[in-house]
Length: 150
Image (cartoon, rainbow, N blue to C red; front, side, top):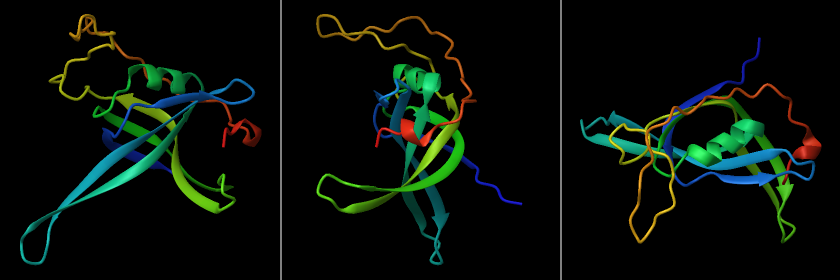
């Protein structure tokens, strides 16, 4: 039996970037930071940060780009995928990323656990809209290789 399943809880390192493939399918990319804390052999606290590239497709990509913000906690469930590509200079590159199948939004950074919608600032002041329930969307459609934007 084989299993390729990833479950991460971490914070966004930046706002999601939304794009569309040539066929019009939405895709969002963002990075999540996770940390690991342990005590070394000298009983000193150690911490290590790991960064994970996340790819989200379809309606879920649109929702993620609309509601997720840098610093916000997020739970990502998906699978690991590695691929190779040639960059603009002709150098072969290999990247490993997590293709999200399910995303659960956490509280936004600095909101004290309160859900705040994005609102354009007016006259230099930020305004918060009333809290709204953010939906979780499961991705059920298969992703075709020809739809990949890279």
